[in-house]
Length: 471
Image 1 (cartoon, rainbow, N blue to C red):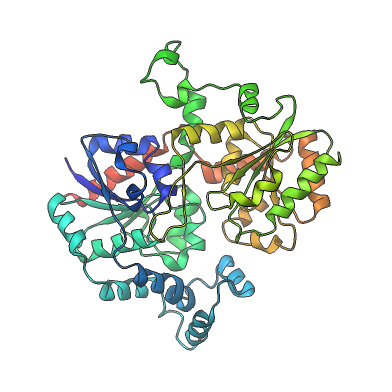
Image 2 (image 1 turned 135 degrees about the horizontal axis):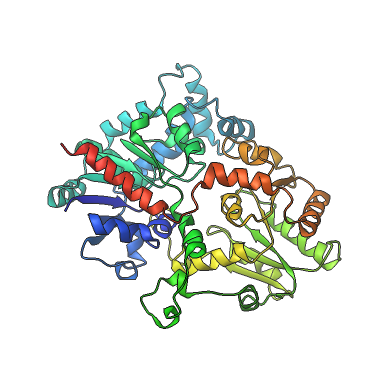
């Protein structure tokens, strides 16, 4: 049986890969050695067990090295992607420009743009990063056929694994980058030999922006969306309720009334689903939530509504204490709160029950309101109306490469004033099918698959990669 090394940097990726069918399917064909810092706070016995799986506590060995290259050198000096809208916005807004980055950015203008590329910095990291005795020891012990990272080096765990693999001439593949990563994180690419992407839009970006050869690219779909379709496509057996081995998502069948009552909400009312972002991403969001609550209290909406607030894993729960106890208003975390790991800020992990909860949250609410969120993709699975908020002069934050097509699709309403927000809510309360054609386009371009088999396509891509590598 061939061996794969899989690196999991933080809880976002353990939610995607260790709490879905992906790891179950992968371990049927390979011995998988999983390296992650999360096992310090959430021990391996809490994850899927198989004789073909081994969980190893792992942290980056040179965090200061990666902090310097990632947060200072690459951000300040690489101008290879200045044509991308996101980096134009960063320059315009002077985002994260401390004195060091300002100085280095000035110096970069005197160096030909074609010299300071991600490939140059990857080579520099390869030359300067000390070889890891620990990594080599595991490689000599298990003889991996492929090193798999979640991203092509966007965090220190993935970056270090890729560079150490290169030092040992081991092939690499990245399998779970998010839809905005190839543009927003372009300067952080440490190119893996192979790349598995969510959709064809990302595949096109990998070719045109990052110059990957097409035969090294694969499209899987979104692993974290599989559970939606598995539930839709399944027909539970009458015996499932008493069968401990029945799939979790098939056993748990809540009606809309049951779900909303469990949240302390009124099933007779429609529900606004407010999904938050980290505080530094959109600081005015708390004032926007206050305005929506005020609209409801002052009866400015066409009908009374429930308000369901789902906190982003990196949002601050204490910001919502003022809303606690309000009638027909529910606030909850996205998943289980755990200790942070290493240099990652992520502290929320979603297991199978949390994925179930999210599925019902989208299925049984009526309007999604968010700031530039990936939930704008996920909500299209249920044709849920979406409002993108940009109050307080934040409209230009939507002028970024990955989100421009979403706005142009006509599948969302972008609102910049409280009056526009109120009107959008009322429009969708009146006619939830409004802008449905645009939402179908978003689904077709970004979600693509509705068979619940993205994890199988991901595994098939890995099979294909290993076949290419095997003489």
